[in-house]
Image (cartoon, rainbow, N blue to C red; front, side):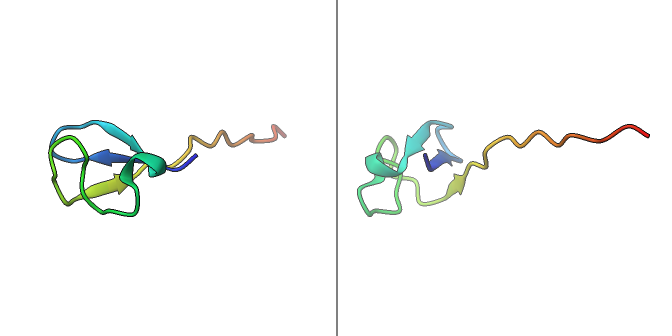
Length: 46
């Protein structure tokens, strides 16, 4: 699932909520940051 975070109101917005627009549906701010999934890296011990 693709999610974005508004830099103004800090709400998490899904791609479906955006509906093809590039504005926050809560505060109409234009700058959104795409959230990356947390990746756990496994390091092999020697």
